[in-house]
Length: 332
Image (cartoon, rainbow, N blue to C red; front, side, top):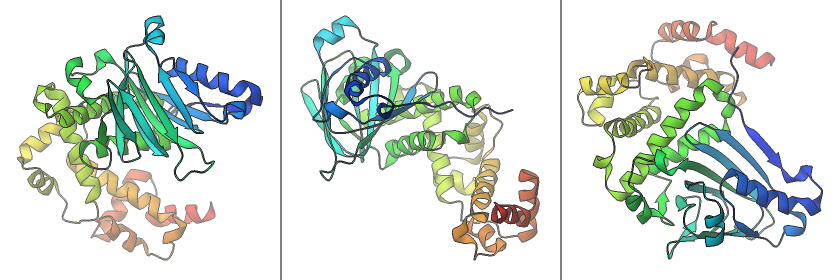
């Protein structure tokens, strides 16, 4: 029996209004690092949080009203978990500051802070409404990041683009986990954590222009992520093959196969293309918005030219024909 990835959830709505704000401050201290929080909504602080433990990293999503946060030198002297926190606002805006620098909090970019140094932030909804803000965070220990602290210091309170390049790949990966944790098993957590760490390392190194200082396996992980993202963007192209993927990344076919062999999963480029295409067909065949499309049209949309080949591949993967799958979806 497969056990889906565990998600820990809390909601201040479970508590009396007078207890909610203090509870939230304690939660922030437990989950990341102690901080002084102030809010115009302290008398009735409605907020919630979800956390996913991936071993070496911990993901969290936080929904909360406008607030200000400060981690003081006194708090650091009292207790410091020696963590980096990478944050991506999903809604709202604000500012973060550390090391005499400040950067905007905005859904288009990550910001990085270090719990060992004083820092603060201000969060507000946009536009100015009562709607809660939402932020995705990643916590990782100092020693887990394969970059010298003196290098990382240059990125504190900086904005790292999350809408393109390595940052875009990282953002998509993290959002996929926190949005659909049910797609993963508990046993997947360590591997997901390692992938997240490799993508974070690659994103920060790219921002610092020091990618060559990363261990070879981390560089390979970043390249694999770029290749996989390319494949997903071009699944509808029936001419997508390992050869075209290799050419697009200026590498030999042998190097591409070696790159995927290095994962130890046994998944080849060809297998990834086939699996992703079939998964797209699986979803679309039971999507009410695509009921008007014939099965062969759905298959063609995902790069399958040959109807018979598609039917055989689908049955082999899912144990039933595309038509049977669609009928089951219609019956609910």
